[in-house]
Image 1 (cartoon, rainbow, N blue to C red):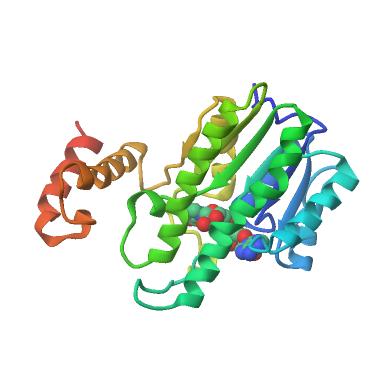
Image 2 (cartoon, rainbow, N blue to C red):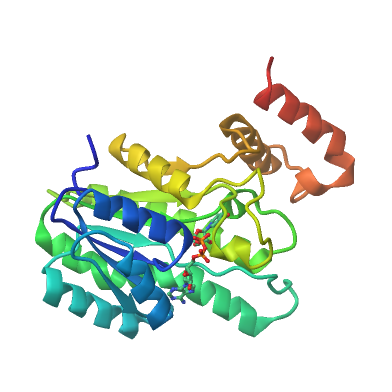
Length: 281
Ligand code: NAI
């Protein structure tokens, strides 16, 4: 049985919905009879995308880093459908990214979309969803880079690490509201072949999942009531993900140098740890 917010006639709003994971989730929800509003930056792209959905769905233009443009989307959704049952704060931006010493404008742009976009979505749609006093789901899309912090992309990693804490706090706050039937969920895709990736890699690499695989796993894990929805891919197993996350946390517990996974003194130890934890056979 699906999450109780996912039901025929219910309404979903998905940011970053014109492409990739957001669009795949939109299609999956519309196939279940939900009315879906896909939100994205470009009018034509979002209209084309919503045209591929079933039933009464539509596309809306907004920049998630701008709360006012999301408020206008909320008003349009309420005027058309009267409610919102599922909010997926999924829009994200990557790119090469700045360093810790430079690129203030890039830091602001990436945090503006990846972190503030999610906060804006929650601030704008959250009160409406709470006022409905009915089952709901808020799904925020994070990244493994926010969990393990690989070197080279600190702004993206920081934005996605912050999303983990924000989404955990949201789940806790929702749990504490009496009678509230809205749950929060943290989706962490693995390597997925989407618009973001296609810009630099023209064909889907064998290691990548399709966005449809992520959507399918998301719906199954929502149905199971899971908060952390971590996706493997065709190269990285769940056990390998667990070992990498565990190693990262153990940096703190064992007082190792930061990011010891990428420190030459710990190379052999990391390899042995992963072999033991992820492939015990
Ligand atoms: P995508 O590029 O296919 O889709 C992202 C969509 O977000 C695009 O349509 C883009 O126009 C939209 N967007 C970007 N900035 C926006 C803004 N300011 N306002 C509104 N829309 C905006 O990429 P994908 O992979 O589907 O990305 C979805 C989410 O998944 C992102 O948050 C990304 O960080 C995350 N993710 C993706 C992974 C992958 O391997 N593809 C891995 C881990 C996380």
